[in-house]
Image 1: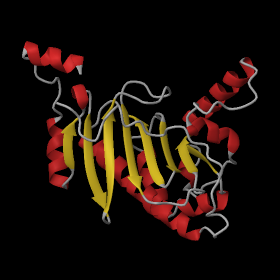
Image 2: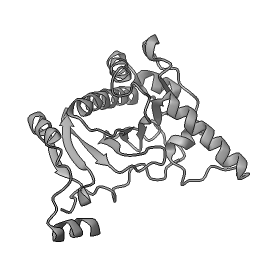
Image 3: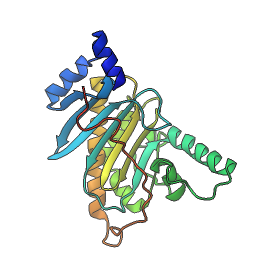
Image 4: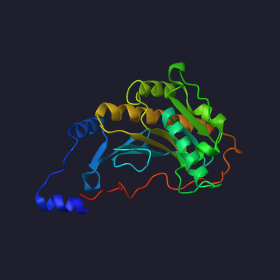
Length: 246
């Protein structure tokens, strides 16, 4: 807020209004607004009557540097549906970090302040997703219920993962897709939020959301029962509030 006031007093304009993103968002029917202190932007959209929210700006996770793209959608999924897919390079990095953190400190319990992404790697079994062979080495995942997770990635979702591996995720940047507390979340290290990159990630996200609903429908009543919570805070709303101050 202080930086924004200083710029206003000095008569400075925001360094970037993202005109290409604004034009693309308007054409797609998405809402667009700058985030607080002009450090990013927010897009609001919907698919099949379900709203989603996209934020691009300063990172909320230590494993992401530069700028972070975040997407979330409320799906009212069963609480036991806890699934995760990420770039394999990120999984290997987080596994090393988790191992070093707890062996060097002689801790025997995982700190609840540790992000779910890291805790799940230690808690849940890995999943062999049915994705095309050329990109199997590109992604890795875990889930509380591997059977439900297998139903998550269908042909459409798998094809979107293939498309992303050849383009926006080609260099295996930090990338996470997960279902948690009834929602589906996406995080990606993305320095240049071009319309093409945003469109590809939104398509991937929407396929993941559709797959999560299908996986939820495949779960039995027993599987739908409450799991012990592993939650800290997956999405901090204080970074980019619903109505960013200008």
